[in-house]
Image (tube, rainbow, N blue to C red; front, side, top):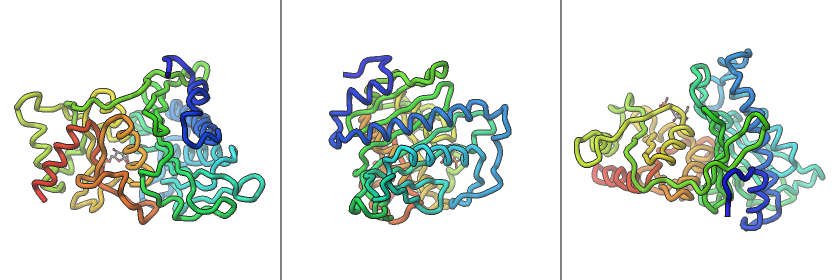
Length: 335
Ligand code: P6P
């Protein structure tokens, strides 16, 4: 049983046996993410002081301006994961294609792949609003001993073996699951250790917070418009409170603690929404379900969506189970 103030390292060792692939490799993989997060956190926290904020002058495959911290975070996570000799491949929001990583014995013996959004919400960097890293971990499905293939990355979200995020906020937290609940660890920057601060995190079944960019309201499907109006009606515990940070990790984290729903639906501007299925929706959906929440595209469970492309997008509705169910009711009624 997790005890408060246990360090992340102690927690990983104590719970390693409960993980069905107990090779210890996943523990080393989580440890490498922990290290990379500390390095990125150091830069995020001093971004205002050094020449590292602002656009890097390049754009990623999404056509989005790459912020310097985006590039830095991407390099640090790839470098750290590669050095630990655990993963056979990495896909990143900042990389056009997946990266093949050979094992140190040059025989492609590593079994895990990682998909990552190195710095989500990066448009918030220059205005000192919290940002995050999101990661998703699978076991490869192609034969060990051969180079990783695209199909290893295009697995359904229900095949994830671990997922999590780091939120670089008023404090830096690492929140992750290996399929046995969700636990949150807070970084003590003075000594560089993470401590179990939020054991067994759970979405309240209900909430009174809805998170959506209402600036897109006129472009939303009718069902989403009807649900937003439902949130705003004077009845029972409504109107709800509207809270939208523009950083998925931060909105998700707050809603998981307080209860709430996050929506990035499809619209006439974004036919599949904005969020990427493989390294944003799937890991956050795995965490949501492990915390007794729910995540769908309005009709289908996110974790059951069959991926077809590395950077494909999906409409995303996620949070307190009863709130997501109500939103789905409105989507179905307006279909
Ligand atoms: P908009 C950040 O770019 C992100 O992927 C999520 O973190 C965030 O919730 C969303 O996009 C914000 O998008 O269009 O509302 O600015």
